[in-house]
Amino acid sequence: MQTIFSGIQPSGTLTIGNFLGAIQHFVGLQEENDCYFCIVDEHAITVPQDRLELRNNIRSLAALYIASGIDPEKSTLFIQSEVPAHTQLGWMLQSISYIGELERMTQFKDKSAGGKEGVSSALLTYPPLMAADILLYKTDVVPVGEDQKQHLELTRNLAERFNNKFNDIFTVPEVSIPKVGARIMSLQDPTKKMSKSDENEKAFISMLDEPKKIEKKIKSAVTDSEGVVKFDKDNKPGISNLLTIHASCSGESVEALETKYADKGYGEFKLDTAQVVIDVLKPIQDRYHELINSEALDDILDAGADKASYDANKMLRKAKKAMGLGRVKKKR
Image (cartoon, rainbow, N blue to C red):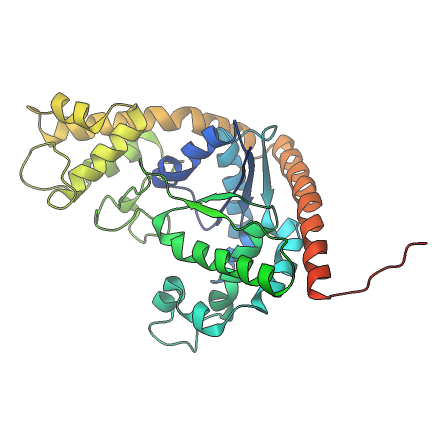
């Protein structure tokens, strides 16, 4: 049995891309692994947040995890800020991180490209916190998208640096990038990854979108003028993206879909794609609405925080001892 850790920011409602690229895989992983699923709310505050909206997003994300099939009897689901060991180890790992390697992180470079004066220092220093999230649980595997691979490499480097400098206590995690459905693209710009933070609402499908809204968004998805349903990522990125979504939701292969729609236009293909998305999301949405305001959700998160704290604190004590922090208490 391996230990798996994954964290998602509560910065808006999850998209179908998050579900197909990550959460859907988590449901299967929890059957044979020890899984920790963390709502990383402290990462969210690296950019300004409305406090009430942030709290709503945290709760909503937790409900979506469970509604999507994450079983609290099999996995540990918790909120990052409710386990103080994360920020404590994050600070300790900052002390062995180098400014140069943090400034090379792509996300920091992108967000500070216009000047660093108005950029939060947390945007520079949050990768060590991300490393702490992972290393606290003796994580073997971290399933991530391509855009997070650089941060995971830093986590591995920090784990090895700590182990070599102080004591060999951290497991150096492996990076796992799902091959199927791992990268769902924007409906309006299929050369970019679908993002819940996209300013254009037509670009993404929220997991809580109503059926009519889903249909409308897929109907207006950018395609091409050729009229042929064929997977060709370079020349037909829009249709290729819709084929990936359809295949991931229906379970049919891309090749089977190409054959099925060989003599049909984009209109019928788009309508059918919308329907398979609606069919996948409906039971999730029903369960979500049962959970969102329930005491059961609070009970699950309380239990998750207790379990995560117990495990994280054991590792934190080892790390503090290795670095020489605090006192060595004499046995009485």
